[in-house]
Length: 86
Image 1 (cartoon, one colour):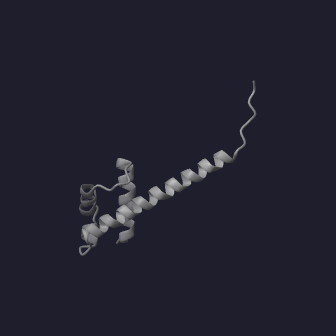
Image 2 (cartoon, one colour):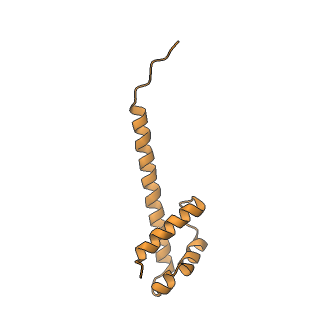
Image 3 (cartoon, rainbow, N blue to C red):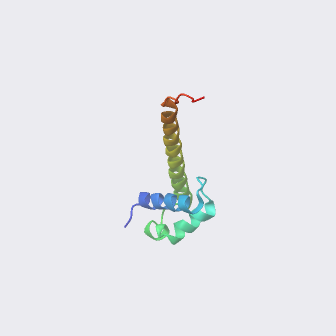
């Protein structure tokens, strides 16, 4: 039986790949919740709580990507500019 966190990771990954969006669509989350087996494996799991966990994971991934991008841009700005040839 997969852990609930595995379902959350899978849902976040699939949603990002399908939509490229970090704002989770409630209908998509409900469909995943029912079709992926979360409902069967965790019958007492609240769908709203699952939605919140997936949204939190999407936000965490977006924040991490933003931070990595910022760090890479800062590295680029540290390189000295070559002298201009006139």
